[in-house]
Image 1 (tube, rainbow, N blue to C red):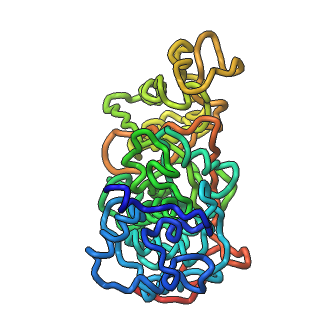
Image 2 (image 1 turned 45 degrees about the vertical axis):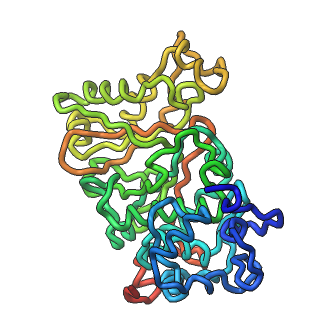
Image 3 (image 1 turned 90 degrees about the vertical axis):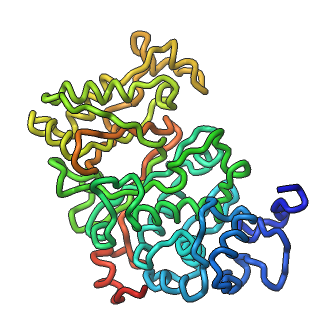
Length: 393
């Protein structure tokens, strides 16, 4: 693309990337939060034309999108009791104002079914928490991605995958919810590669990174329960983590042997945790979880073991991006976590003795767990029961 066709960033920012990156500024059809509706122009039914037009404007992840017509967007808005223009979150670096309408537009583009809307909205609100540090996540050269972990009845009601292949292709809820979050980051937050997203190489995890915990296959309490929510409460947890690293251990029969394999895989020089210790995500397969549980180990035992045994030599750790803080040095080693609580453990996956380690963003981000709530702060129990809607696809 030559410079004459490259999208121009408006100096008169309104906080809406869809407006700011228009190639031609047509004041009569400008997509902007100052208009009563910013979806009226999305009426062309030709998906190929719309997809390419949005791609040229740098408003997609490079994959085809569903044209966000008014009718399609309205179906998603039927699954929220919020005012369509209500401010849900302010997303850096562009400080874009995320409203239900803008979230719905991007969710339609991502291929979301209408009943996925509460999960996407909850995730967008979560990542705006200052402890999550979205500004740093979007600005960094590190390939950190946003992972959404779903817990509770609503994740099961919408058919989110927690079993075989849950981190890969094949499930519409996982794929489209994760993709909707990424499109919101691009089109509302301004995290366009090379502009607001400065990751050196990026990551395939930036396309879509969402899954449900396999609660019925876990021998331990769920992540949601661990963080203080009861069985009737559906939640989303967002974490800033790298793409998952496989842990293959088909032979270990004892908990300690299996955890040694996992700890050795996690103890990697070059990950952010090696020089700025922080959270890591351990996604344990049901078979690995059973091996550990059968030896009488609980979640806290796993966290303690991982914290004590995941470390990198100081000489290697000090090659990272930030000078090592002396408080993290332990006998010429650096633990990759600050405390056992930094080890986030969930159970997911199908048959097979594989687990996954996802390194984090070090001290620069804290995971956020939020319940799905209505406007009056009551919890969602069932989407259809509470909002009184049937499937509107």
